[in-house]
Amino acid sequence: MRFERRHAVLLLAVAAWTVLSFGNFAMNLYGAWSAGEDRATSYWVAHTILIVVNMVIAVLLGSLGWRAWRATGRRAGRTPVDA
Image (cartoon, rainbow, N blue to C red; front, side, top):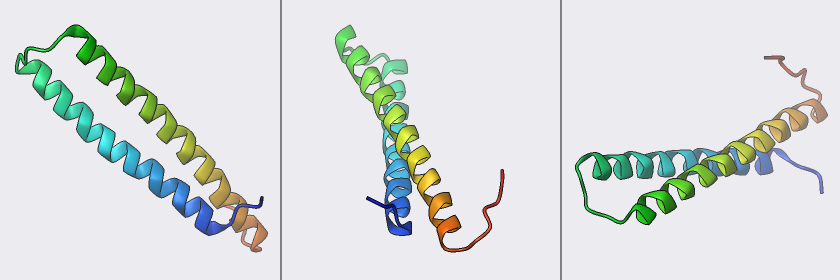
């Protein structure tokens, strides 16, 4: 399968959405913890692991999307910009 720009855009959008939604979830979780919400330790651990795993997935998808974006630019005859 060859990546096209639309695939790159989709991957980047999913990565951005994941960072935004789980970033918000992390802030809400921290707010509940700092307010002294009474929950079992397993609740805090499980949700923290969920946030970390999803952030790692977002980084991987974002990296793949960025590489696909750059690769499709080269195929179209555009000169890539080195960062």
